[in-house]
Amino acid sequence: MSLLAIPLISSIAALVMVFWLRSWVKNAPPGNERMQELSGYVQQGARAFLKREYTYVGSFLVIVFLLISAVGVLKPETGLNYQTGLAFLAGALASMLAGYSGMSIATLANCRTTEAARDKGLNHALAVAVSGGAVMGL
Image (cartoon, rainbow, N blue to C red; front, side, top):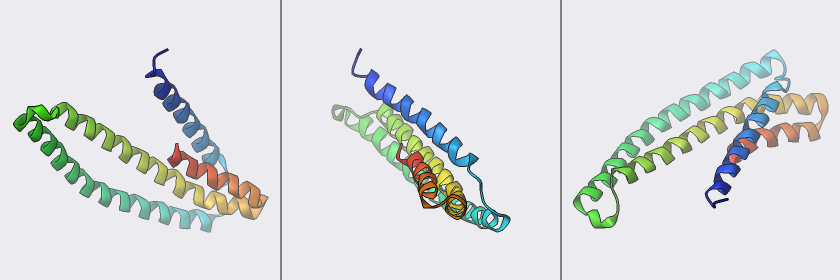
């Protein structure tokens, strides 16, 4: 088994856990109508924030990609080239996807955590909250 298999297996295990946690949080009771309404506002605000942020970040990513590629053309001894720039873009896009996914489940978990605390107690609420936060961590 090569060393490359370790991060690959770890990544797959983390993704399986993320999908399981997301499903568990989504299946938790969302609370009453008012809680769901307020949660919807929080989710809407979070999406608006990420849209604005990713617009600015996207411009920055294109500039950095072009700089990395240009340095590779002008100074080939640096080892940089367009492939390095593409790897940078792929990493940035993966990070943005993780951020969006994490924000999405975290805002989804808010009203479910409140409902769990109200209905089943603090221990269950903590389980819902930690599960929602773990999605971003993984």
